[in-house]
Structures are given as structure tokens and as C-alpha cells.
Length: 386
Image (cartoon, rainbow, N blue to C red; front, side, top):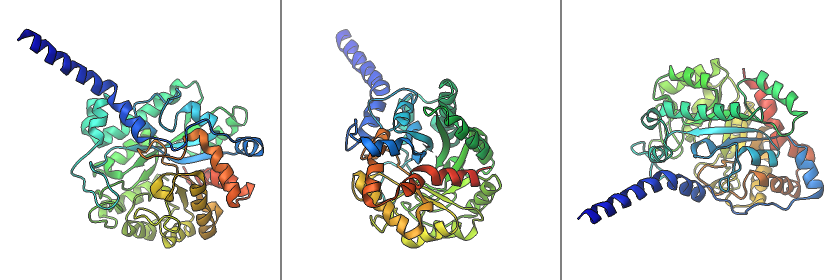
């Protein structure tokens, strides 16, 4: 009997160790795959141009995963060494706080949550396990910790002044990388407008109103009701504009997009999306939506993931970018990769030279490549941040 008990206890302990040690990395490496593994063979004039770009990506979910982003990882898409190798000037880190189980693009409710188990396996603090606002604050604190530990290699941008100062510093230090915080889903406010100040003080400057389900703010493109702005949502838009925070319409339902565009007095952003003109999927933007956003001075981030581009290659990203450029103009489009977003990608961040090459092959001029790959975002942030 003792042998049986000891055996069962040993198996239990092995299962516990496996849960905390191996499950998070197994999920991370499985979800955040790449179609083409590095190194990426780009040389000559393409390399020269790429290294001269000011590259900005509007969306990576890297903080969700239990990786030290100051160290190069063998899996996933983004960390500081690879950002430097890819010549990224600014990476926006988006924070996920809740996703439904059995997630799909058509209809999800808010009754379940996949992030709790992942957070438990990664030993997040108790408060972050049971409270969505605390989850957002915990991930923000992680980024701040990495910045402080990086000896100046990673900087957190909170204002236009911060960005301008960073741009001056980077002229002499090309290995420096800036970061910003974005929230993917305003359900992390937990229906309390006073939580907006907590997020602002933690460094958040972009808030996506919804993610994969309807929330207190309004309807998701993947929700049940897919409704427009609620009263709380209208209050949030006004409060965000007062603080010069940026409203992100990624994942928003068509009605929510219309309602926001009708009341917004400042340009909005779509950090990561596809476009129906080249990939007719439910979460992608129509031509009319893109025109509304661009005519109001907004910015649209083109995603790299299969549902955004109906493919899995740099050429597919370039094709979507070309369609968007022809429709709304080069100054209203940007990179919105969705790196580390639990979706497969054509390449990790070191493969961005492949996209530079594909854009040139698609007919982009060097100036258009510069604008799309990052200069549009820099100009947008300098004009619209506090």
C-alpha cells in the first residue's frame, strides 16, 4: 500500500512540476509558430534600405507569455535581441486580460476565460488571477521592470515628449528600442471609469475597446450582440480623449465602429486588422470603414496573420498593404503584426527585411516603404500623444 501511495504522490508531484514548468512554454511555442524559420536570406540593397528604416509595429502580445523579453528566445516572435536585429525602433506591446474558451471569429460570449489557467501556470500574483484590471497592471509592471533592467536598451514611451527624446538618443544608439503599452479590450476596466486613471498611470496610451466578446463598452465583431457604444462606452471615449489616449478599433463590431466615428473628435487607430478587399473575413475592415477612419486622420495597422491576409507570406502582407495604400493613401497605413498573438506568422521579427523586399516587389517606392514601415506611426504619435 505504501508503494502505491508513494507512486501516486510521485506522479502527482511530477504532474504539478510539469504544469508549472513545461505547460506555459509548450503552449507558447505551439501557438506562436512561424511559417519560415530564421535566418532570413536578404542581402545587398534590400538590407541597406531596411537598416535605414525607422520601423514601428503597432501590436505584439508578448507580455502574455512567460518569457524574459531581454533574452533571445528559441520560440515566439518578439524579444529585445530580435527587435534589435530586425531594426525595430518602437514596439507597441498589447496586453490581453481575457479570452473565451473555444474561441472563434463568429460568436463568443464572456462566460469563460482561457487566460486564468495560463496565468496560474505562469505563477502570476493572486490578484492578477482573479481581477482583470490587476492583470493589466501586472503586465504593465512587467514591461516597466524589463525597461529598468535593460540598462537603457528598452524605453517605455508615455508621451510625445518621451518619443521625441528617444528619437534624438537613437541617432547615436541604433540598438535602443522604444516600447508603448496598449490594452486589448476595455473589459479590463471592469465597468469602472475610475480604473482608467490606474491604467493611464501604469503607462497605457492605447486602449482597444473590445477583444473577442462584447463588453461594458460595446460590441465585438466576434461577440453575441455585436452592438454599438453603450453609455459607459461613450463616457470612456470622452475620458480617453481628455487624456489624449488613443482609441483602438481593432476587433470592433461594425456598429461600434460607426458609433465611435460619429462621436470621436480625435483620430482613432486600428492597431491590427485585415481588409476585406484582399481577405473577406468577418473581423476585417470594409473599404467604407477604412475611408471613414482615414478621412478623420486615423491610422490602420495591417496584420501579418492568416485571417488578416488570407495567406502566410510576406507577399500576402504586401498585397494587403498595396490595396490599402491605393484606397486610403500611404500616410494612413502601418504595421500591425499581431506577433505573439497565439497565431502563426510568416516570420518572427527578425524577418521584417523579407517584408521590405516584398513591398518593393509590389511596387512601393522607397519613400512609401519608409512611411508604411514606421514613419507614419511616429508622426501620428508625435501629433496625438500628450
